[in-house]
Image (tube, rainbow, N blue to C red):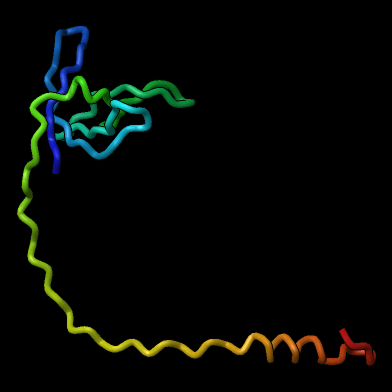
Length: 110
């Protein structure tokens, strides 16, 4: 996980927020970030009005202390592979030929 810190200006002063960098943003020089520690510091607008969210697009120039944190991965138990038998493919040509050549009620062919 790639983490860093950003500074968010509020009416009470500057707040330093720890964020996880999720990926490249929609414009050059931006990145998608997610606030850590359960914070939702980013205000977004919707049709229902403003709401708080934990993800936002942030300028990479404002990211500080960017580093990689290793998360201990849980060991994955390997299941023995079982041989999967492929299902026989339906014979579409014969089904279509049967459907097209079947007489309709009344003696007419389709």
